[in-house]
View (tube, rainbow, N blue to C red):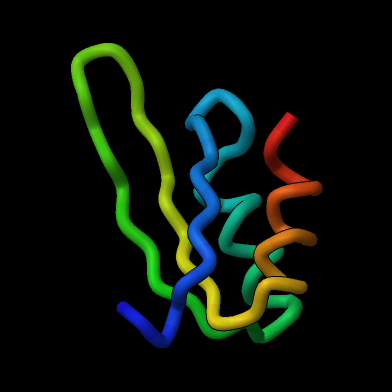
Length: 63
């Protein structure tokens, strides 16, 4: 995971998986992801190799 040091967490309430996936696919971004599910909420976690892409992704999906 050291190749992808820039982590962005997106609450499920901020965007759906389809919207997130389309954003990543259009830009052909290299990333790794996982979903953290707890009884209270679901959070999507994306790790990026590029800080610039991580910042742009966060601006689009994190309030």
